Length: 93
Image (cartoon, helix red, strand yellow):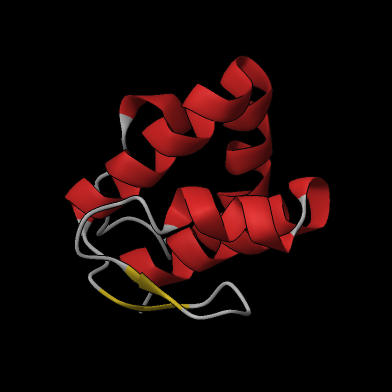
């Protein structure tokens, strides 16, 4: 079953490839209550509010481009019925 941590990890790992590990992790770790490993995996604190917070952090950094990147990074995970149980922030719909 798909979880918020899966979506957040996919977003962070994609950001690492684009803006680099240091910057991507810095912004991800600004989300309250979320623990992110050095490889970009979200290890705890992932929920709907945390995903929305992550979206806002990257949106501050790169605006519309960040939104497009985040959408494309989670699209494969949401295909089919996998993501039907998760509520997404407006920016990711």
